[in-house]
Image 1 (cartoon, one colour):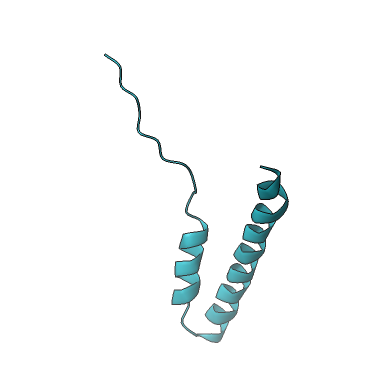
Image 2: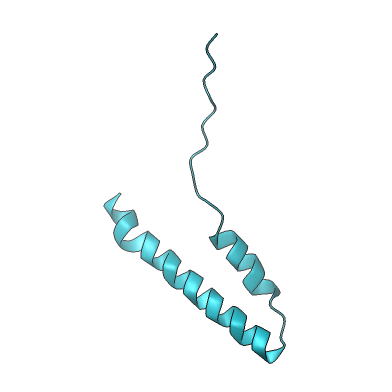
Length: 57
C-alpha cells in the first residue's frame, strides 16, 4: 500500500499532466490529438478489483 502511495499515484499524476500538456500543444498547432485521447482514456479508467457478488437466498 505504501508503494502505491509513494510511487504509483505520483507517476500516474505525472503521466496525466504530460498527456494534458501535449494534447493542448497539438491542439494549438492543428495536429492530430488521437494518441493523447486514447492515452487519456486509458489513464482515466478506474482500476479496481472485480469481485463476483455473493448472493444468498
